[in-house]
Amino acid sequence: MPIYTFENKKTGKQYNLTLSMAEREEYLEKHPDVQQILTQMNIGDPISLHITKPPADFQKYVLGKVREKQPLGKALERRYTIPKEV
Image 1 (cartoon, rainbow, N blue to C red):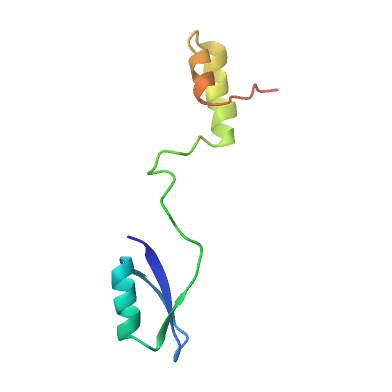
Image 2: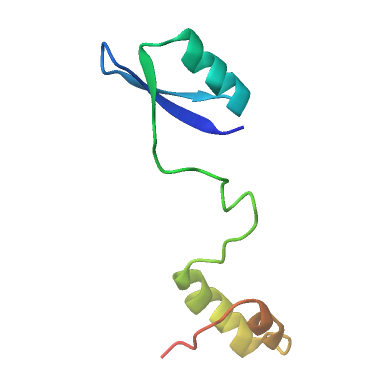
């Protein structure tokens, strides 16, 4: 479910709630003094979705050395771009 940011018009206080779209509409109808604030949307955590790649330091110093020392090190090259240490 998405996280919505709301602001109380009277106090100016902002807070987050996790609601479905239907629950959000009900909440706004029941609370006329509250308005939704549009913020950056968090669709998902990229780490939990497994769509991240290792940091550049890890690629350069760890995977780069594995590639140089191991006979199967080129198998890693297909998955990550490994810059050679200069």
